[in-house]
Amino acid sequence: MSIGSFVLVLHSHLPYCRKAGVWPFGEEWVFEAMAETYIPLLDIIDYLADKNVLGSFTVGFTPVLLDQLQDPYMLLRFDEYLDTKIAAAEADIARFGAESEWSLQELAKFYRDRYEGVKSSFHLRHNKDLVNAFKALQDRGLVQILAGAATHAYLPLLSTESSIYSQLKLGHDVYTQSFGRPPQGIWLPECGYRPPSESSSVDRALGDLGYSCFVVDAHAIEGGAPIDVYSDRVLRKPEVRSAAAKRDYTAYLPYLVSGSDIAVLGRNQRTALQVWSSEWGYPGDGNYREFHRRDPVSGFSYWKVTSRLVDISAKEVYTPDAAFGRAKEHADHFVGLVERLLLEFNEETGKQGVIVAPFDVELFGHWWLEGLDWLKWTLEGLSKSPHVEVLSASSYLEKHPPHEEIDLLESSWGLGGGHYIWDNNSTNWMWQEIHNAEKEIEDITLKLSRRERQADDSASLRDRLLRQAAREALLLQSSDWPFLVTTEQARDYGERRFLEHKHRFERLAHALAEDVISPDIVSYLEQLESIDAVFPQIDFAVFTGKQGFHSTC
Image 1 (cartoon, rainbow, N blue to C red):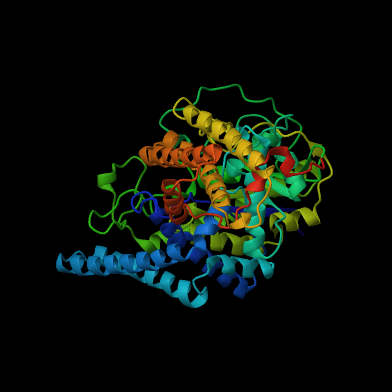
Image 2 (cartoon, rainbow, N blue to C red):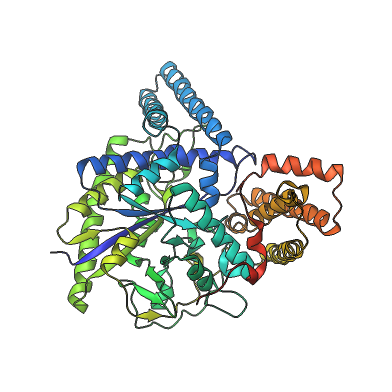
């Protein structure tokens, strides 16, 4: 007899990297995720579906990522990337053989075989169309796909209603074009939420666009202290602030956002820490592949974690059999943990609870090599459990609709549970620039929308300039740039990309404001259209402020 439900939510996002660097920062971020996570995940779903032990789960793609996954240039470059990785593995096989490094040679063969398998799946199983492959899975009822904000802007810090609406409306449109149906649920970037105000409201935009559910971190529902899964990635920590008082709500139950028909689900803290914690989470096990130590010639990782206390130079050689055996043990442990937590909640309350487990999908396969196999065995184990229903977010809400309303707390799933990762002393200058651009793009689009339209206006240079200015404004809003600065994972790259989009937007906006379209600006426009080619069918009318939509909330 079922005592509760398990809702897995895998969030997929990468910034717009097309023609914006290759390695170590740029296009290879997308190619790594495709090769190490997205394609193997598709293969695992097919495997579980064939065994009839999948249930259903939820996966989300941001529009800016969907655009890149369907871009002919990026698909061609991905093929080249796979060939390069296979050739590098072959070279390592020869090199280690010549050096009598037999263990390393076997690992080089391991990588060669993995990349050859990925290439075969990409071409033969998925016809080089990953978006359509996920669409087919959704059409079969095996996954639910969430929509996202256009460029993954951090919505709580945007200053205008038109910016919030444009991010969400474009996300809705790209989703519908990609998957042949309107979305039900949405992934709010970084689980960021700010309660409604007179000037801006995520709730109003979500309601107008027909979204039915989203996910927040547990403390947005329960109050209290947030969990900490970012601390090992951030050098400068936020000041400790008082946690919100605990509330009589629980992340084990769904709620309705006050004054709306939109359901909200909260992240389960215990299961999140079991996977994310740098101290005792599964990926820190000594048997797993060490991500950070790389071979200086090929870039492959031939070492295992060994111990968190061991210097990177002292890591031991990786043993795949031991690592994947450990992943199976951890999957069995996680299945037992989910069953125990749901049983405890049922015994305490008499209610059937839900464990919502949202993760960045790139954790599995890319960062944690064995993570996709852990995921496979976890889903298989939970699907076979007589005590747990494995459901997508919308399927769960259809079976267990919420009735109680809740005023969510301002929150995110970032360090400290607030906005620090994106807004701090190192990044607040970025937000001033974003806010300036928000107001300017709204003013320009509103002004031009009131002008008399010409018969050939849709093909006019002015419209092209405005569309490109809108693209640059959206790319400027990407939450990735302040994130990279704060975490110092790629600070220089994040700052450079931010300033590039700022300057591109300003030059286009100036030309539109002056209404002077010179040959130089036409040449500049053509250059940008070939580089920042995201959202080809963008409708700049979404930037015209509250005139762009009618609130029903």
